[in-house]
Length: 263
Image (cartoon, rainbow, N blue to C red; front, side):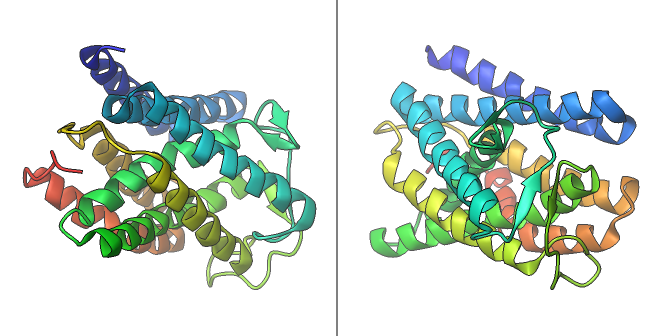
């Protein structure tokens, strides 16, 4: 795919994902369900297309296979054994399923894994190779896992999945056990570590950080404001806003300062 076309396509998909999520507080019922699925598909497509801009078709396919594949395996094991997230089940409201897991779920892992790895690489870009790899995976995994502080309260409130034993839980956030967040962090480390190891940019690439920065910035800011103002979940806004902000804010500051062309 020509670079100009992939740039335009990834930007358009990112814009579509953001705009569809902006509409979430205004929608109800079937429209909200379809928009939720559509926004995940657009977001994941934007991430995969951005990966193609940086490393070609092979990087795009690898990103989807690694993040989506490991996400699917973790969810399939989780729904059957209760590990590593705790026992939970899907309500069958998120479309077609594979191994009892909605297809949109591994796409959700993919959509956030790619920009999280971009963030990790960018923040660790000046560190020595070995230390930089560890820092990349650590910051990427934290970013990906902290997103769940927003995601699970929203999806359980909408009835898309539920936990069999939702205790103990974070103060002010009932319905989601602490084991779920621990499982997310463990899975995020595996996914981000594998994605970082398996994908490399085209030598000499200076592709800007625009698409990953927009996707992560919007997810952090939109989720924080949405929970605080529209969904009336201020505690969720506080947890997620602080946790995700620990990595997203330094990343955005660096990108906006003009240091966005290096990995």
